[in-house]
Image (cartoon, rainbow, N blue to C red; front, side, top):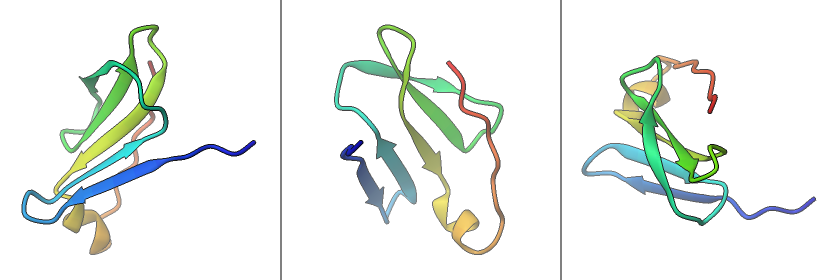
Length: 68
């Protein structure tokens, strides 16, 4: 199955956003302060965002279970 995934990075804000589906939704906090889930109006995960992305690129991995 083919699916388009949209990835956006703001270098100045050090913010990464990954969107699996373009539809209305909202961001919800996860167990990590750096990661937020994007949830659609039916409660399905349609993406996520990461603050301070450069910390991850330098080897400080973040592991978060995305759940709606």
